Image (cartoon, rainbow, N blue to C red):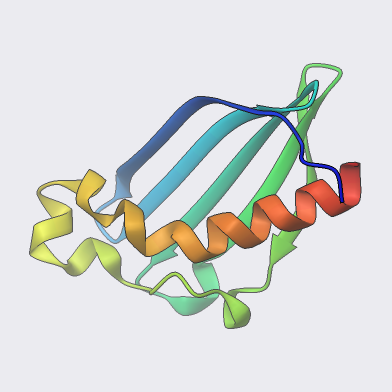
Length: 109
């Protein structure tokens, strides 16, 4: 498989509600803008890991990991060290980030 060129535009971990810690990454793979969106919620079935491609100025879903197969722990917002400093939780998302990128590359290239 050919190595795809990647340029990171943004990578943030943030509280998106009192019960939700989220991760968002926007990057350019080859010539395509990609957004990864991962949510760790207190309710397992509200967790998600999704990859989007920017197409005609709209984000189009291209791949998602079912919540039951996600490796990002649920309820991260309830850990005091992450609630006060969400960026410390970024490593908790890394396995799902890698999987989203792997399948994005397989689908698009």
